[in-house]
Image (cartoon, rainbow, N blue to C red; front, side, top):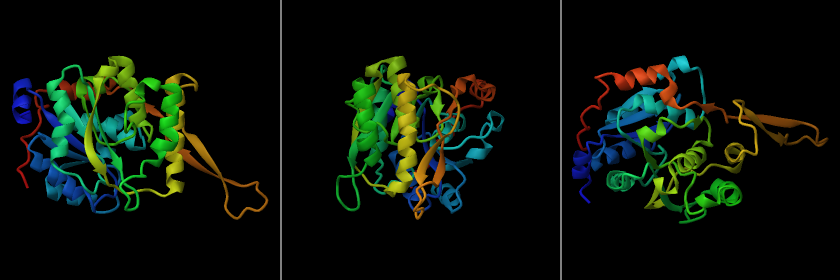
Length: 303
């Protein structure tokens, strides 16, 4: 399929967006590969408070860099990946938003086309999820521990219709703005699962497509960093199933304090599970979408 021709025929504009925090080591190669695809009308990096050279490196590679804190300040403070994704709808101009994790080590230009093809060829599709093998410490498989140990069992129990989705928590996916803007966004790590459940609930199972991207290589986190993510997934699943009251509050992960022989002290880690409302309800977003100047810039040159 000639994707460039399909884009022109459907008058579809594409924004490729990378939410990023402290990813200076990998972001340059991803931005350059996206540019080389020739399918992005704009490449946007939403910098979530990086303390390294992420913004500088991304800008030099050809991306437009926007600070999370500068987007929709009137909506109040927020935290977490989902908060960045929600705000990126305001930062990006395309009809289709293609989100990519900024810590990928083996990203190739062709992946952009694979993610876009179902959206350009099948009008019923509103969300495209990447599927892949997850490498782990040099082995081709074994990654995706939160997916296999937490998300997969919860989906089997609460959302069996989604059992065919290979990577429900994967960070590489693309969606139609007209669908994304009417959905709430979980601010933290539960965002991918919530979007998947909400898209199927609102638009039907056939609205989700999957494309194979081979093997995904990225930074694997230690177990103590995965526990808050797992809790966020559990809370999101229980809320979407109606088993847990939906309210806008943080939750805490409680863990015994190491070295406490009496067994009475615990450490509490706040876990972001609050939700942003559908962004179409935000006046600043509606005003920008109505503005005649709300058109994407010309695509960056290959490089």
